[in-house]
Amino acid sequence: MALASSFIARGARADEAARPNLVAIVTDDQGRWAMGAYGNDEIHTPAMDRIAREGALFSNAFVSTPVCSPSRATYMTGRWPTQLGITDWLAPRETDDGAGLAGLTWPAVLQKSGYRTALVGKWHLGTLPRFHPTRLGFDHFMGFLEGGNRPMDPTLEVDGEPRELQGPLPDLLVDDAITFIDKHRDGPFALCLHFRAPHLPYGPVPEQDLAPYRDLDPTLDPAVPGFVDRAKVKRSTKAYYASITSVDRNVARLLDQLDAWGLAEHTLVVFTSDHGYNEGRHGVNTKGNGAWIAGGVSGPKRPNMWDTSIRVPLAMRWPAVIRPGVTIDDVVCNIDMFRTMLGALGVPLPDDCQAAGVDFSPLLRGEALPPRGAIFGQYDLQNNGLAYLRMIRTDRYKYVRHFRANFMDELYDLENDPGETKNLARGRANEFGAVEAELRDRLSEWQRSINDPILDAGKY
Image (cartoon, rainbow, N blue to C red; front, side, top):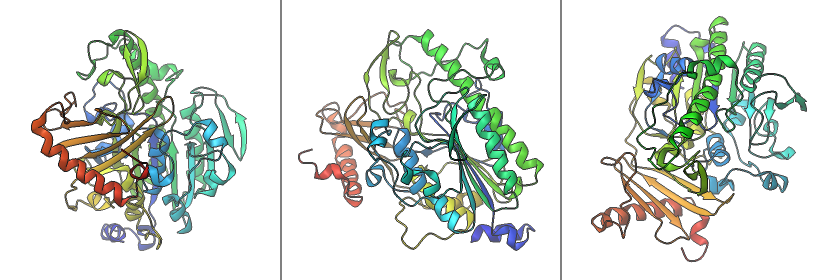
C-alpha cells in the first residue's frame, strides 16, 4: 500500500488515498514512433503527449508478442500466449469453434476489491458467452467482441444487444466512457478504453482529423528500404496519422472531463498500444504478421519480432504520485501489467496468482528496480502462414529462434545496429557464435520454465 501512503503524505484523506481510479487506454496497431512525445514532429497527438508531459514517458516499453489477440490476452492476465492457448489473432472460425480467453484478469481482481469496472471498445478475445467481458471482470461492456469494425457508423454491443450507431467509432466509444465515469465518479472505478484505431482500414475519419496532414509530405524512416513504393507508403502514412489523431482528439475529451469533475489528481491514466507497427519499415506492412511490400504489391507474410513490431508507446499520468515530465528508461513489458496495475492501486495479488512479469509501479514513485537481464517473446503465426518464433532481447542483443525452420534464426547487435538490418546468426557471422549459443541456452531455459509446448513437438 505504498502508493496510499504517498497520497496521505500529500494531504489526501486516507479513504480517498486507498481507492485511486484507473483509466487504461489501449490503441490498436500504434507504433512507438507514431506519437509526438517520442520525437515525431509530423504527427498531431497533443493529448497523448499531454499524458507524457504531465506524467511519465516510458522509453523502453515492449510487448510479449507482435499481434493483437495474444498481446491483449497477456496484457489482461500476465500470462504467456502459449499458456493461454492464444498465439495468433483469433479468426472468426476459431472463436466459433470455442477459442477465447480463459484466465484471471486484473480487472476481475479489481472488481472483487470493490471497483466498478468497464471495458469500452475492442475485445477480440472470444465471442462465445463464456468469454464475454462481463464474465471476465467487467461490470459494463460497450463495444465489439470481434477483431474489426467500421471506423464510421459501426455496429456495437450496447446494453447486451447489437446496435447500428451513427458517427466516428472513437467518438462513440469515448461518449460511453464518459457516461460510465459520470455514473461512478464517486469511485473507485477502473475503465479500460480499447480503441480500434489505427487498425486498417484507417478511414474514413472526420475532416478535422485529416486536416493536419492535407499538405504533409511525410518523412520516411531510414528503415523503409528503397525497393518499396515510397509514394504509396507516404499516402498510407498520412491516413495512419489521421486515424491516430482521431483517437487523440477523443483522449483529449476524456482528460478534460476528468479535470472538470476534479478526478484527475487521484486517477491513474495509462496510455499504450497492443503492439508496434512497421508501415514500410523493414520492407513490410503492418506488424508481426506483416507482408513483404515491393512495387506497391503485397507479398508473402514475413513473421517477425523486430522492435518496430514489439516496441510500444507507454505513458502514465497520476498527479498525486508521478512527478510530471519524467522519462523512465527501465525496460518494461505488457506481461508486467497484471502485477503493475494491482500494485499501483494498492490491491493485493490473489493467493492463486499465476501472472508472470514484475510490478514496476515503484518506478512511478521515483524508486529504483533491479536491472532487467532480458525480456522474452513468442509468436506462432497460423493465419495466412505458418511460423513459430521465440525471442530473447537483452540491452545489447536480440536473438529470435524460428522453430521447425532451417536457416531462419536471427541475431542482432542492438548497440551497433538498432535498426536490426544485419542478421548475425550462425552461418552468417561465425564470430558471434558464442553470443548466439548463450542466448539460445537462456531462451531454452525460459521456455522450459513456462512449459512451452513447442519443446514437446518432436524435432526442432
